[in-house]
Amino acid sequence: MIGFIWFIMATGIKQDTLTVTSPAFEPNGMIPAKYTCQGENVNPAIRVTNIPEGTKSLTLIVDDPDAPGSVFDHWIVWNIEPKELITENSKPGTEGKNHYGILHYKGPCPPSGTHRYFFKVYALDLLLDLKEGADKKTVEKAMEQHTLAKGELIGTYQKK
Image (cartoon, rainbow, N blue to C red; front, side):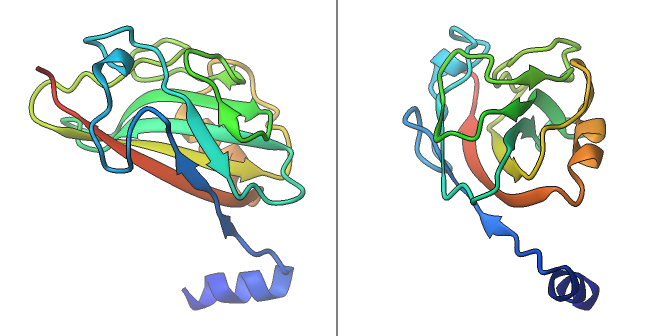
């Protein structure tokens, strides 16, 4: 922690917090079936506020840390225009390969129980120079030292 504080003081970089919400569900609330494998399987609208000055792009990663075995990636998208609303059922930027092996949003579909789904948004000081289909690890590596702010929204889902 001391090293991180020293880094911020030495570089002058201050990381802010984005506010991430959705008109589709409340924080820590149940994600409507429309946005899951039991519905239309389209992405919900995501609202991002408190975007810092100097933001060149946003990155959005949706994952499930409660999946058996490892964190399960549902959607990876970067080079999103830094605006307040990512619209429902959209392709807002360049998409990466998720755990299904596809390049678009695939909604919650837990094998059992209630899972949490993290909609993590990052404000970056550049556009990422990555080809479509990159995986989450590659995207996260490319974002290192370019994140101005971040925030997350957590939703839950259990199959009916």
